[in-house]
Image 1 (tube, one colour):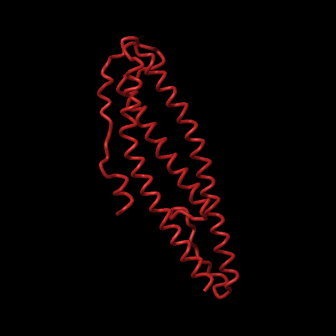
Image 2 (tube, one colour):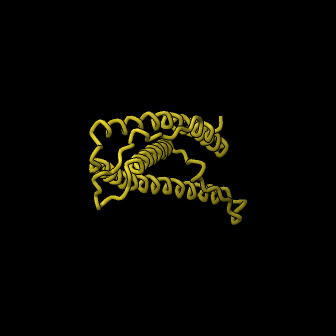
Image 3 (cartoon, helix red, strand yellow):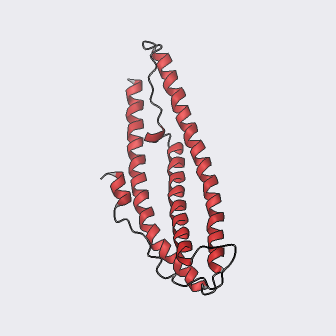
Length: 180
C-alpha cells in the first residue's frame, strides 16, 4: 500500500464543537474565540505528533545506517569514471553529507518541538482565561485531540516502519552490489 494512502486514510478533523462558550471576559491579551483556540491547540498537537514521529524516524535511520529517500544525495562524478577508488570515496562522501543533513533535521525538529510546547502552554493559558472554560473542558479538549491524533500517529508509524524496512533492504543490496 502507498505510504500516502496509509497516512491519509480516514483523515479525521476535530469538531471542537464542545467549545461553544463566548468569551464574556474579554481579555485584552487575546482576541481569539474559544473555538479558534481549540483549533489552534489541535493544530499544534498534530504538528507536534508529526514532528516527533519524524525525529524518531530520522534517529532510527541514523542508528541503522539508512539514508531516507528524500535525503539521499545520489550524484555520479564525471571525473574519474574509470577510477573505482575515486567513485567509492565520492559515494562515501555524499553518504556522509546525507547523514549530516539527517542530523541537522533532527536538531531543527527538536528546537521546533520545544517552541511548540511553549505555544501549546500559551494556548491553554488563553483558554483558561475564558470565564466559562473549566477544567473538564480542558480535559475534554485534550481527550478529543487524542482520539483524533492517536489513529493518525499509528498510521504514520506503520508507514515509517515500512519505509525503514525498504531502506534496510536497499542498503543491503547496495552493500552487496558494491562488494561484488
